Length: 78
Image (cartoon, rainbow, N blue to C red; front, side):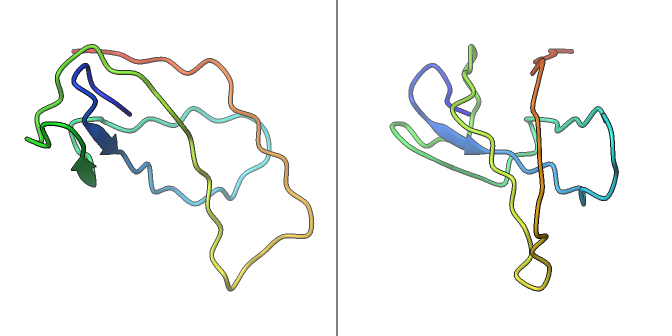
């Protein structure tokens, strides 16, 4: 995620993918794992934009076939 000043934030929704079908996953952006970039002050300056989504797999378990679809990404602000 990148804020208005170009500061990058890594948000981790660390949940094992152990289901079949659809599932809603959320990750509070205020609990970011790391930040870097232009002002690198650690403050999320809105608006933000999502630059990438990464799904990783443990080296001890690599499935033969996997299909992951990501749809309807929504940002909520409370």
